[in-house]
Amino acid sequence: MAYHTRSDSFPSRPHPIIQEADEHLSRLRSSESTSASSSTIRHKLSGLQDLHDCVDRLLQLPLNQQALAQEKNQKCYNELLDGSLRLLDVCSTAKDALLQTKEYMQNLQSIIRRRRGEESEVLKSEVKKYLASRKIVKKAIHKAMGNLKGMKNSVLNKDQETIAIVSKLRDVEAVTLTIFDSVLSFISRPKSRPSSWSLVSKMVLSKRIACDEEANVNEFDEVDAALKSLKSADNAQNQPSKLESCIQDQEEGLESLFRQLIKTRVSLLNILNH
Image (tube, rainbow, N blue to C red; front, side, top):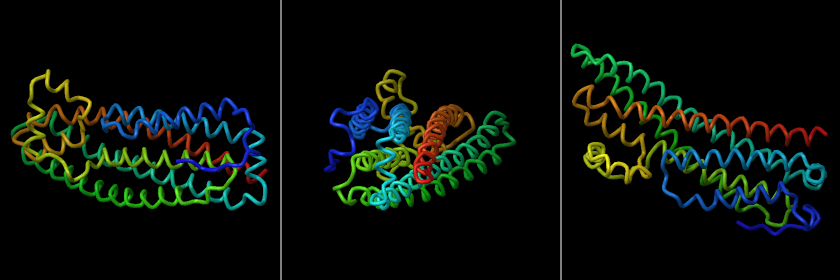
């Protein structure tokens, strides 16, 4: 995405922070086409945090603060504030989806660890609760992903002739929304996927084949498939542990990013108050 910018906003020789932000943007854009896996999602979230750290430092530059504070740029400034709030909302949606999944998974694991024969009905009940919670999570995520399309279109359709700092922040917002879309898609898993039987079959393949396909593993999908075909507690013992580790990684990444997004929003608000 390219915007026409005026030369009076950024110096002719880019500031090192601007160059750093451009490098992060380039890496994140190039990662958009990579297959979604737990490791790639983790790296994308880490990259987003680094990018938004650069954004916060860009907002501390006096030249950019002066440009945004000008009365004629008030409309653009308000749009940036709205954009920062949108990013926080989407990040919160992803965090809530992970939290709900984790809570039901922990209840299920507690039953699995005990896995006494007389508790088989309890296990089945917890499995049903977990799968029901997944449906609720997926419904909320699909709604959020629908809203994301409108958000991204809104960013892309803004007036192209604007000051450079606004153009740069719009680029950041667009890339961030795209990455969030990837994260939400990974958590919910699109409906167009292999059959449950083929997914369960993958889980019992040899270690060599499993390692070859590790890059494309979706832990959420594996657990859903395993639990839907559940025969006993023993069959469900390993996959939830893998999912819990995956959720932990993504929770930490989203929480760190959420804090960084708040910090950036505070910086924008401070410019208004000055």
